[in-house]
Image (cartoon, rainbow over all chains, first blue to last red; front, side):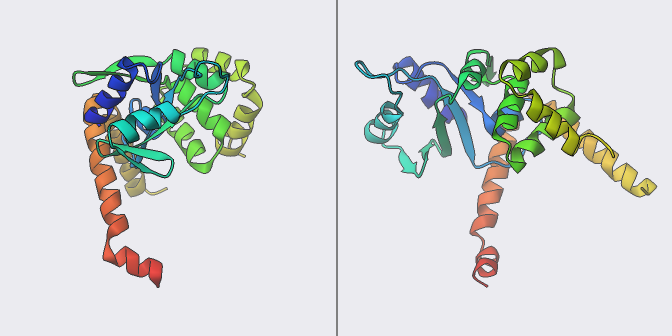
Length: 173
Length: 53
């Protein structure tokens, strides 16, 4: 994965992508015990091409697939052995999650990982079974800071979902 | 819950805590091993037979 991150850092240095942050299961691994995953979710800020307001992943595909001959597999690009999914932020929560990600190192390779609270907020927003399971892992591991999580849930209108989640999974009848 | 199960769960919690406290780089190495194992299981002939059957 170190080599994968080096390629992504080079993409950033070459101006193909802006800031990025690791999210999903690999991002969660920063805080939790490792759990099996086949892909890496990289949330990226992209610049709209001149004269357009639409954000496109095409420059990412051009750089990796056309210019550097990495394989495309469906929505993934296999970069140094890892399936990578590049995800432009879908809304303000995604943008904030990238902006406030935590800089860290994988050995000598710099990278950025979303905060635990943003990972939980995004998981709550997605609301699939595996997302709820991950939220429970975060809660059980005791790594969430309520003083950081509450304002995020409030800002992005996720309090009702959080209440529902609590009713379903945390409150004993 | 029996004492035995209580001990098993406590031991699992302890292992998960220990793994969570590893440096990120070490956890990524474990993640790679887990991924390789998942892929090997997915590609195994036994699983293929099960899917076909």
